[in-house]
Image 1: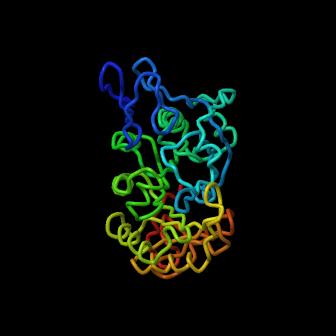
Image 2: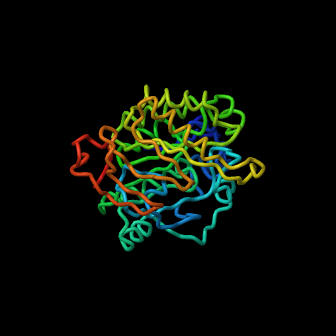
Image 3: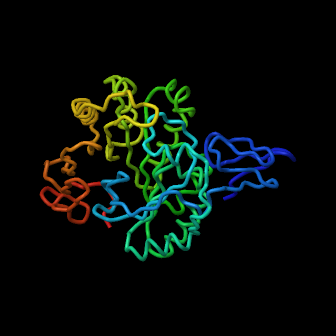
Length: 329
């Protein structure tokens, strides 16, 4: 796909995310890393990751996608959101590119193969804003038998989301709140755009899981959790895993307390009451295993990031035969 379109002789429109920024010559958009250079979109972070690690796939978090596998994970700098709680703000809220870190797509894929990971994850900061780099890696990764994982806040443009279907295998999308005002005034984006993206992901062949960071006094009311649960259960599906993560003070929210375990357990209870089958808690010590929604048998055992499939045969519970949705190999 082409990542921009011309507006007039002096400006172009970036089509990577739903901001659809108009860029005049030598100017960048909201993300701070995509520029109009001589009438073309130039991504300043292409080939220059700011973070590069090998992670368990459960850290994305993905619990129903190649459990127990490892993923080569990378991120750059910049973001199209302004989350005051960002845990990766050192890279997401800066636009200083380290050009000394030179990792063209071929080198990233070679590292993944060298370390015998089963996938490459585009994560740490918002990968939508460096989509040209991610896609070039991803196409080469697929040619070498690797899968691709997108960890995103869900503000992809319609053009990018449609294009993702050709190479992305799994995605974890943040649903940060169910408040239009919070998305607009604090995060500087639009809730409707994220909800639309979630529906598009759910209708695609890309495996989808959802994460909500529960922040005391921000998005942890029972009313808001009920609203999110109703949307997921009626618009997306009961089989989509939903992760509730505990907030810890960070960035611009150092005075906000950590999320009580009682809040997380209540959220899980609410989600289950809507029929959502797979609900997990993150950033706390708890039972993260996967249980059969029909008979209750433990099919995948998790302790921290240690994962073992214990009762899953051909995508079904070995006790009762109930299908357990996911990508298992």
